[in-house]
Length: 393
Image (cartoon, rainbow, N blue to C red):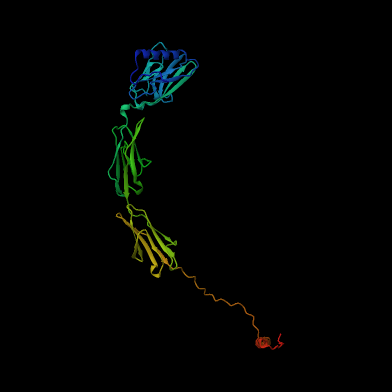
């Protein structure tokens, strides 16, 4: 509820103050059934203003009034207490623990805070002791900074942009004009907090990363805050250099327990995988002798001279590491069965039956070939115009 259009730091002309007072008195004189409430003048205070908190819709027969900071009526939060609440008699102020020497009771239902600051932002409450019991009203006051004191963009610096893993420590510093500002640190979009290898100074102005790791690299920036605004610094790139980690060899066909089996004249592909910064150089060896370079080693057609143990060595200016060997060999043949294979049982004949079967078989063969010979002769006779009969069939 805006009761005054006067600019900050100026309560306006006497005529405007008279109108404001008349308006407040008219509201107090006719509370009706409206609830107890508090209005703030000005309703949007700026740092350095004098702010008035005035209670409206007052109940009858008020015995005493107490102002608090916050929403709870607790003694540590008490600003001031007024025992005599007669609207005609002056109110004697008894200050509490939350009084800062800037709060004055201009009347028993009006609290004035002089030279208000952003740190004064928060809830304020008034508790009235009446014949019908306690009544309470609260309001929130948000104090903005003056337009002439906007936050300045902070500057960021670092003792080194390129760090060696596990050896170097990196120190970032956030440079600000005001010492009272809150400072936060980020790596990319992740908020950083102290602990383990990350250390923050008492005022958060410096961030120290001890014994940097490869995952510490990224874009760092700081951000400063106050109650109404924040500003972000430029970003600083941290690069961490490190040697090759675990070197793994992938293969096609797939190896099993370090053994790769392939037939001759087939292709074999070996792929070396590792992580390092800067990027490493790869060297392939066969049985201890260099046989190629690059991440991949491809054998187009496998020959006997390509069989043996292959290793990959990854190396940069920080260090080097060699992979476990992969043995390329021909597929193993199935083992021979040493157990004798017994032949299938065969029925045999002997004695007189065998002799009869042999004679019958021989006679049959003689008859067959005789008929074939006679058929050929008969065919020739027919071609010559002679007819003959055969009694073989």
